[in-house]
Image (cartoon, rainbow, N blue to C red):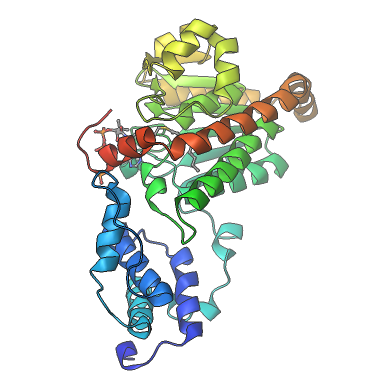
Length: 364
Ligand SMILES: CCCCCC/C=C/C(=O)SCCNC(=O)CCNC(=O)[C@H](O)C(C)(C)COP(=O)(O)OP(=O)(O)OC[C@H]1O[C@@H](n2cnc3c(N)ncnc32)[C@H](O)[C@@H]1OP(=O)(O)O
């Protein structure tokens, strides 16, 4: 069917917008910019936003893309948008045949591998080529997997990473995907998502164990303060470069880290961005035990399988007794950290750091 010969109806356009949300493959930044520009042209007409400053690279790229469309009529922009989406997702040609959310409910995950056996549910980050950076979809999938694990018949739940990294933390491209409501809407939604995400760790009812198979960065480190045990390979490192990124601590680390490792040691990590080896993290109490890389998996999983044979009710009740004293406080800390971060994400310090990373001028 030659779609360019047809005129896209409003319904085609809305279907295309839904298809974008369901796209399985990441279209990449260039295509995302084109989609953004065509969407704006189709809904608002010729570029009407003020030209962003020279250092505002993300909005400048958007401005350029939108401007490049010139005086393309709205209808043509709408048709081009529909065609571009169709070319990206041929299997979703008719979105009315796809039930949004079906995948997540039934057929597994895009960014995780989740398995359950021997009384252990294992949630493995599975974006090894991106060092297991946590994109928006992965935040949602981890929450979904945790909620399922809290109700399944496993005794303990384990988080680990596929490949050479445990996780490189927040996917910095999350910040480039600006919704029609603009940057303010983006940071507001991100803070809501982060609060809900961290809340799932605070409320998780069974022992939660991290098997840290390699380097960990950012939120994948701070969350460890909410785990019940952390086993690390001697290849792992622990790095929270928040100040370098113009950001501030999250994952309740502003509360848990000073308690776990002393306020001064927490300052070195959370404010000055000191990267710890696995041995140092163990000495500070963030890591429970370190294993040589050569025997890491074997030793840790043998131990976990033994834990998973313990009486389930006793294990669950003990976790609740330990967590309940802190739960309210942790939720309050989480809320405050997310609110502070909302301001940070709008700052020049943060924007420049993210742009620097994305344009690969500097690496941490
Ligand atoms: C809802 C929002 C909630 C936000 C919560 C707040 C969370 C805060 C944080 O987590 S702060 C920490 C953020 N993470 C980083 O700053 C790490 C950035 N990455 C790096 O510094 C490096 O990639 C590295 C040190 C992790 C690994 O370096 P190297 O071994 O040289 O590998 P590459 O850099 O070549 O990485 C391979 C490939 O993966 C991409 N990638 C890796 N990490 C991230 C990331 N965090 N975000 C986006 N992309 C990442 C990297 O760009 C490479 O892609 P390429 O091959 O260049 O296309």
